[in-house]
Length: 483
Image (cartoon, rainbow, N blue to C red; front, top):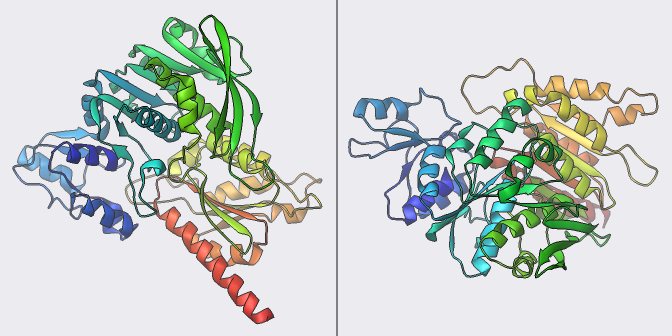
């Protein structure tokens, strides 16, 4: 909702908004920043609407019985969803790039925004996360650019089915995997999205894309993949983060041009094999608009990422704190495998963003944590998982399967005799998030990396900073005691 509101504000519209998170006192810094952008904020009680209001825009996350909706109906004000309004202004652009997929949308959108901006194209960009390259500091929540209305880049979400509203000039599809909806629903949804575009950018390394959609759109697709000579952009020779602790990722990329194959080196200052994929997707999309891959790679070498995507919060007492949006099996696997490229134990705080998604992804989440939580190996102690109860921000939902149930099931996965009781105890449930802090501070040791994971809750970033500050404080107290 925020980037869409800011784009319209910068285009000259008068915007008023409400959010139950503001009413609950969550993330006050963010709402203060929003108000400074010239957007009037009101309680979610209908007071922000008048009979002169042209339109009420609602997100898919709110219920139809909130006061604003009732007030709009009383006043005869048209009600439209966020996705419908975004699609209206997006589809008007002569050159539009939609970025879709289960994972990597925000990062790839940010990468395209940075490449086009560095190439002097001045795009309008609508993203689901803050754009760190365009941010002025930690209290800047910029997640959009208001540029050329005929060059529009947007992250397009499939979770509510609204992706079919978009008719892009270029449709990027990073991957298909289980997330908000079953695969039987997602595959035809993405296929329809691709069918409404003029050009497609497809990841052939994703098995579901390769098996179910790639052949149908081969004639108008630019493809990429790992070690695939048949792909237009072939990614080879991945090099992950080195042992120095630097966040980085490198690979070579082969692509055709002038009747020969060219190879360039792609280096990122953000980590992970998945981010190399995201970067090549962005490079491929921009190549359709005439931006040379060499130019794109040069821009990407200075790309800083987007908010809450393996974002370094800081280090204290030789302990690193990382803030991450991972919340589905693919994203969690990508984060943990990337962090395990370097030595050191992981202390993971994972807050699930809804009871429904937890129930839907239960088996796959169990599998990914059982696979990536490492036992003690003689050098490092075992990784640990701390899980608070599922995020609940109001409304009606089925709570029959909880985080506590999930942790009990996960513990069963460690009942192999080869796993010690100590390993099983490394998976813990807590009723409240704050209850984790004493256990975490007691467990944390030098060289550990603490990862805060979860979606939909901006206060997780504040929680990450709180943990970092407490570690620094406790470290100072220990030093004082020892002296």
